[in-house]
Length: 95
Image (cartoon, rainbow, N blue to C red; front, top):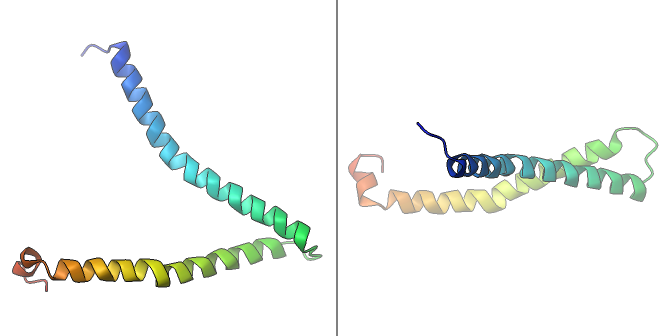
């Protein structure tokens, strides 16, 4: 198989785009957590080391719990009911 410059460039661009899809969310998450940690340290001057990290971990966990109950559960429930109404799905005996 002969590799042309265009083929190599297309493979590079495809892999670069996929790499960005993995790296950007992780980097953005770390940046936001670092920013929140810095802001917590300036707003509240904690004398106990690690309190800011604990507050961030608890806050993110609470937001995740509330988000899963208020956002994802209703969406999954809606699609589950929609799929259960589908005749083909019921033909397999899974209704």
